[in-house]
Length: 211
Image 1 (cartoon, rainbow, N blue to C red):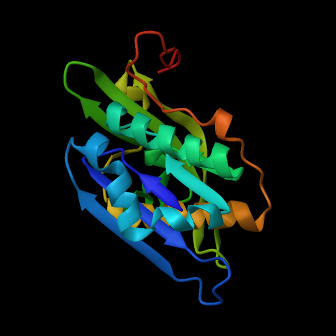
Image 2: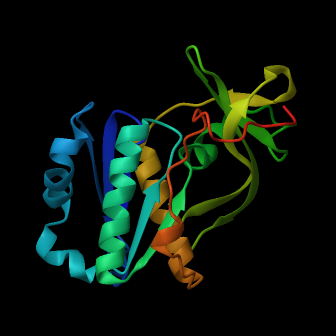
């Protein structure tokens, strides 16, 4: 099961690993800031609670994005993973965008590292740096290396080439569940305790010292 709430949309995807066709069932709920009241009901719409014990792996987008929504979803994912003792994979929302956005680069740059950035009014620029590794056809997962995780950037001139972050939860929730399938294929054990939200604008977080 995959959960993505880094924007005002809440995405859920479920994949049956025992289904030879590996069909993905997904849905995006445009619920704005009411996630705290609708989190359970949205998940149950696509995957009823009585089946939660069948989950063998959960993946969650950990930000940057709406801190409140991301925190709520991560708390839910951590709780379920702890209770049923399953792996919990996490990945940044910018990392999920990389397979979509890198295609906008010039052909001469497409195999080189690039930045994904977002501008927050009165807070500054948040950016992460990515590089294409390979496409894993068995799980339909585009593997990108996150060279620099999303963080506040002091000098925007130093993050080139860069692409503006663009939310598309409908596509990114599918990438998120494929990421979890990729981890499952590699038999990666991910501990729920290590999954925390990314909050680059927190005053106690370290800013990028080189940019």
